[in-house]
Image (cartoon, rainbow, N blue to C red; front, side, top):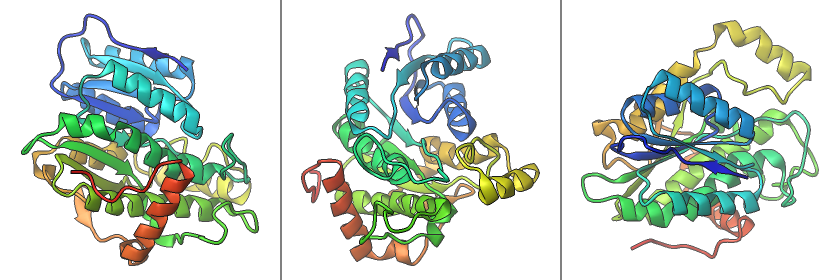
Length: 299
């Protein structure tokens, strides 16, 4: 793991951090934030891709303040190390965009023993956010709250939390695992928003649209074939980043928390995702899985 902090760059208006920023929606999000004048930290798994992305961003936005961070967000040890690097590098953090994620056509487990989709797409959001929450709280103020933006998916509407088989040991399906993890993002958003009530931090989830990215690069078979067939009809990554950028930067989003968005507008998430009992059960299990003590509220 390594980090690369910008040197000699002009002061930026806000400090923002984007995971999964080396391609697709994450790259376009980082680009939009840089164009808005923010200091932008980009997180990726491959050091070479992170360096190339930083170079592309500074070429596209001359003078942009771009910081590089490298970590595998399916590993809890690497997430904790990354959060320590961020806390050491940044005296403030105004926006955290949890964007990194993938879909896998075969069941795999991480170094921590969790099913990889759940670990990367859901637990990664949970642990990284909680590790940076004190910094976010210290950076927000009334009328200018720090913002947490969780990139979820409309796939959450197909999801259910398999409380009796979260590891998918009995049965695994790529889309089922992905839908469950994206549902986890929405449930986490709602549970966290309740606990942040009164704090100068907001948290929202979003569906970016069905976008032509590297989303299905880890799949083959029928799913991979279907994805390749529909790719010509998908939206661009820039379009996919629009709702993320709205939640990260728009004045209209100030003070808005615990909501779900699509096309930069508030939408109603699935009925299952709005079940507070499911939210709380998922919250408790997620905290246990990332080794966090129960958290009822932040004051």
